[in-house]
Amino acid sequence: MQAGHPEGSPEALKAGMKKHGIGPTLMSQILRLSEFHTYPAPGVLIGAFMVDWAQELLGVSPDRKLYAVCETPKCLPDALQVMARCTTGNNRLRVVPIGKFAITLNAPTDNDTADAVRVFVDLEKLKKFPTIDIWYANSPAYDKHAMKMRLQDEIFRAGRDILSYEKVRVLVTKKKKWKSVTCPCCGETVPDYLLEGNRCGACGSMRYYERI
Ligand SMILES: [Zn+2]
Image (cartoon, rainbow, N blue to C red; front, side, top):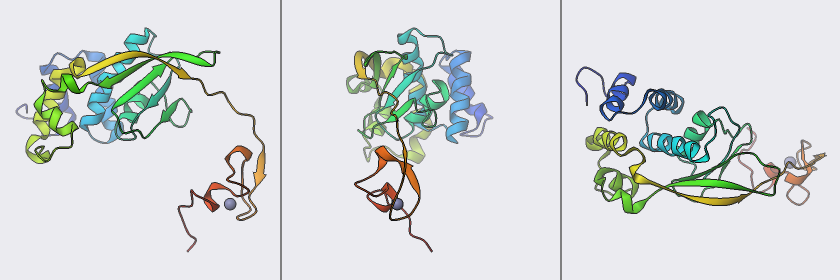
C-alpha cells in the first residue's frame, strides 16, 4: 500500500503497478478494465496479463478483430471484452463455464478451424506466489480483508510469471441461416434454431420469470 492513496482508488492501483514496472499501455488498460469491472478484482488483474500475452503471442496489432473463448464466467470475460474487444454482444466472445482460468484467442479465418493460443494460470508456477496460490485454490487460509492488498501486490509482481501458454486448434462456428418462428405457448417469436421442440426457451428449460 502506497502512502497517501486510499485503498482501492485508481491512484493506489497506479502506484501498485508503477512499483513493479508495468508499462504505460498495459497500465492504462488495467485502469480502464478495473473501472469497467467496477473494481480491481484479482481475477481481472490476472486476466489483463493473460490477454496482453495472448495478443502478443498471436502477433496481431491491437486493433485487429479477434475471437475468444473464456473458460470461466468469473472476472476473466471482462479482460477480453475491454482489451481484445471480444464481447458477448459482437459475438466474438464465447464463455464456456468449465471453471478454469484460461482463455483462447484467434484471428479470423475462412477455414473450419483456426490456430489459436491458449493462455492459462499454471498451478506449478503459482507455488512461487503463495498468496495468489491460496486465493486461486479458494483456500480458507486466504483472508480477503487482511490479504487483499498483498494479493494485488503479488499479482503485479508476478505478471506473466504465473501463466503458461499452448498452441491449439479451435472449431470455427459459422453464421447460421435462420427464420423467425412463433412460439405457440407465449406467442413471441424466436429464431427457428433456438426452439426446444416446438416451444421457445422461455417456455421451456430457460424459463426464468413468471408474470406478476
Ligand atoms: Zn414461448
